[in-house]
Image (cartoon, rainbow, N blue to C red; front, side):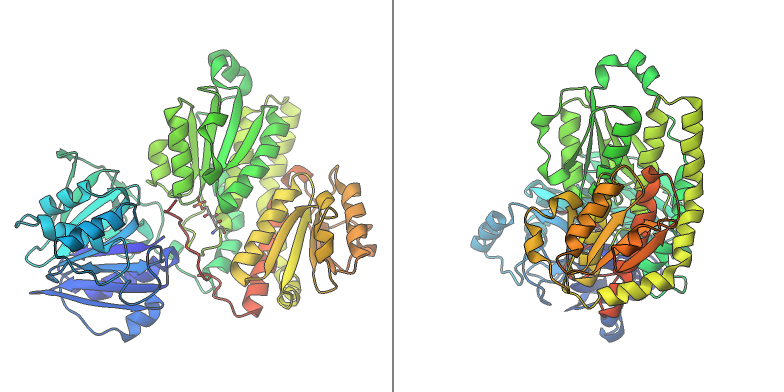
Length: 594
Ligand code: AGP
């Protein structure tokens, strides 16, 4: 939601902070700022992108500093609302990610006590609370200040007279990059990959002092030891590697994401036969919880688990989760979140935990919050995803969900082998679509001219259509809606015009004939129809304007291939429209507010 960074060591902090903020810009990008400590604090902040700020901001000195890239929640996008925020004395600087729910009351009380505020943000109250409690011990003051705060936070504090940073975490991610005579703090590991792959993941309630050669962490007043971990990603993983955008690079990394995720084992999942015997009472149904693209993966997972395992499976948008709709202890709750930090998903999982349900997390990020609140974790192996639009993490989530379904299913050996064989062909089939990129790019450029588009699918392809529409709208700003193909005649037909393209997903499954009927009904009303159809489908071309050919695959696996084609369509439509593809307006990669 916002990105925060900190540095203490023997080097000038400013270049490190600016470099690190650029790596975190996908978390927020409406304004940014840094503060460094020499003899006193110096601060520099502005609206706009970090890259411009890095070019234009004045040199400030100091070997300790903090920085922030913002995604506005409280207060509009102004330089005054950009972080860091200072107390009245100008000696205490704070960067914060999260939401202080009781900030208005705190602000009113502090104002009565004589504190003067310079911004509309919730964060600024933290700086003033620290000032209020400061009596020479910065950590003590931070600790007291945070007891007054309700809400979520990752906080880094820099203050005159202190060579250390004080850090604290509650429900918002914060990691410490461990260096040699220098240490780094950031919202996620991508920020300090240039400098170190050694990381400590802070936990809720942790307050730490980070100095150049030591890290001390306490929780509830007790000193705690947090194990150092090695980040499994390299600097190159977090760079564009010659691609114009991270999104394009990440689309091209999908064959590898499938291969790597397929290779990862899910040892704790057992076939249903064994599960039934071992824990009969503990599996009545499965509930998948997620947001956005991860929710779409969940919808496809629902279909696949339902088909292969015959276990009642439901999917809930995490923010709509109602703890009353789960049967105590008998519902397995699976939270899907590439970042592992989405507040809505984490809150739903915590509810599930409190009701005694077994919980499983599917995430791409080691050490993320979801890994700490679920009993078991399945890691997707996509490498870091920087583009705000989820691409390779979605494909890896599908890989994990299909693997899980196949592992649980009571299939005979022949059926199991046949699915596994088909699964293994996916990387090369995805590659075939990528090899056809130029043709899809041309259709994407044509799509760029429209203001509205519909995506339609049936059965397993309906959530695929939802994902296609989400990709198009979030990066090209074209209004796109997804409909179950049979439903579009019940109202949306009123919106069909010759300049409203319809993207129809038509795999050769049991919905194919019904899909052709829907396509004919749509076509009769004038719109251009672009069909995603199997490579050997001769029939469909007479009913549509454009056919994007998709390699032949068992229809159960068609979501993998159709999704990749739609990602390319969206990408090239957005590129043609000159959009900021990796950093779409108003969005952030990791949504850590409710
Ligand atoms: C996807 O392109 C979006 N950026 C967004 O919908 C995202 O999938 C959603 O916020 C959930 O994120 P998560 O997977 O990290 O929980």
